[in-house]
Length: 122
Length: 293
Image (cartoon, rainbow over all chains, first blue to last red; front, side):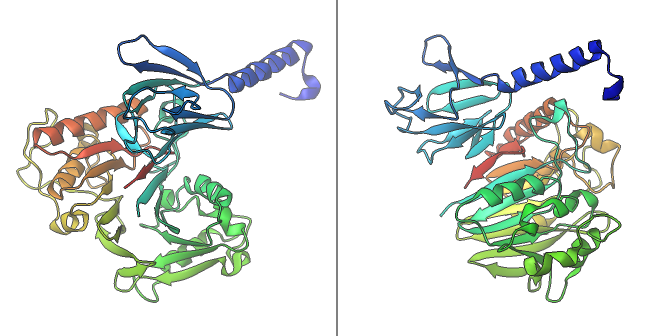
C-alpha cells in the first residue's frame, strides 16, 4: 500500500490497528494464585518488578514455611515477563521443571513452596 | 559453586517463529554453560543473537567467551554474524578446534562473513575472534574440563562435555542413535525394552547433571526420517537411562513440532522412563529457560 494513495478509510483501519496493538502490548500480566484450600486469587503484576515470598514486604505474600522470605521475583522486560529464583532454599518450578530463570508464556504453571500460580500474558 | 545452563535457541534445522512455537522457541541452537565467570557457548544458531545482547548488559562485563561449534550445518552457525560481542571492544571470542592447529571452525565462521553473504568483513573484527584449540579433544579451561566426542550425523558432528568437580553438563545434539537389528520399532505403544546405544556415548554422559540431547523426532516421525542424522526421543531417553543421567533436556526440536506436540513428546518419554524404573527428570529444552546445577 502506498501512503500517497491511502484513502481516509484505509488510514482509519491502519490507525485503529496500531492503537489495538499498543493496547495489547501494555496490558498487564497476571497470576492466579492457588494456596491451601482457599479459592484462587488474581494478582495483577504492577511496576517492573515484584517479589514473591514470605517477607511482609513481598508484593506476592506466601504463608508457607517452605517459602523463603524473598523466594522469587518477576521482572518485566519489554512485553515479556521473566521469573527468577532468588537462590531460594526450595527452588522454583515451571510446569514441574526446576528452573533458575525463565521467560513466562501464557498458561505457564509456577510452583513456589506450597503455592501454585497460573500465569496469563498481558 | 553451581553451574548454570541457559537455552537461547532450541529449534533444529531452521528458525521457526510462529504462534505454535512461542513456548519452546523458534531460534536455532545456542546454549550457554556458565561456571562462575567462565562462559561456554555451544553453537551459534540464531539464538546466539539474544545471548549477545544479554552479555552486553551483564556486570562485570564478560571479556572472554569460549565458543564450541558442533558442526558446520547452517542452523548451528547462522547467528554468528549477529552476535553483538563481535563488534564490542574488549571482548574476545575463542573459537575452538578439536586439536592443535585445527582452525576449521574459525575458518568456517570467517567464510560465512565473506562479502557475498554479509556486509561486515571478518577481517574487520580484528583480534576479537581468535582460533583456539583442544588438545586431542580435551582441555582444562579455568578449572573446567572440556571433552569433545564424535557423533553420528551426515558430514560429522562433535559433542562436548563440561565438567568440574562433581558437576557435569553434556551437549549432544545432531546425533542419530541408530536402531539395532531386532529392536521394536516404531514402539508406538511404548512396550519395548531399553534400546542398545553406543557405549562411548553412555560413558561420556555417565551420571551427568544434565544431558542436552538430540530428540528431534517421536517414534512415528522418526520412521520416515531414518538416516537423516537425528534421533527418536525414545532412543535418547534410553541412552540417558543407561547413563544414569540426572536430568535430560530434549533438544533440537523439529521445525514442524508445535508446543503441544513437544509437551506430548516429553510426557511419552517420562512414561517410558517410569516404566523402566528410572528417576530420570525429563524436560524439553525451552528458549529463555535457565537451570542451575
